[in-house]
Image (cartoon, rainbow, N blue to C red; front, side, top):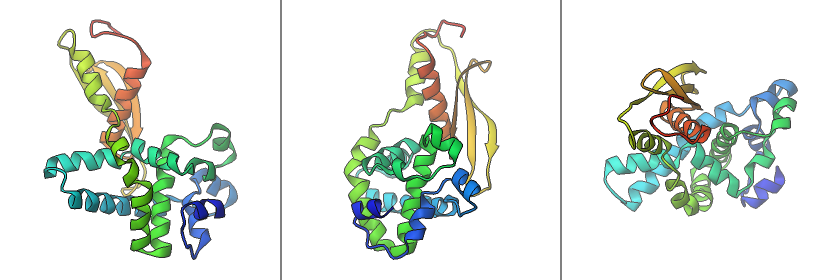
Length: 224
């Protein structure tokens, strides 16, 4: 942990906060310690404010386009991209079963948000603001180029016959402040093309579309 904090150049006061930020529920259950969900909840809000502040000050475009950019810039895939720059996944504490598989994207994204939450609690807004500008802003253009899988799938399906795709919520878990959604994308409301999970319905839809695109080389005339 000290190696990560040194890398981030954080004059930390309470190292245990950062340990908690990188503690997945599976590890917390096995070791009877605190998990990172509350810090992730806080970090999500902190990141949202920082990103809104940045886009507003840059005055890049109109409100609608800024909202779309913000959604992409704080998506799970974007958070994983930021986390990769500091090799965050190697510091996440997982239970034995999860450790064997390694952290998935959702775990990495949650840990990144929890880390921001820990910095905010430990050192205050200015330090988390500075960290945001050091480890997020330089890679923001990369995050904004993340592929829109829903649009790609739509274009693929509509490139041939005019068939319809739709997204359906099949599972919802977690408390109101920390929901997880599972969504399927269907062709003509009957044929399941892909499944995705996410912290928001829009994120789950993107993952479902990505899954559909990954599953096969097909054209819109196939019956799947």
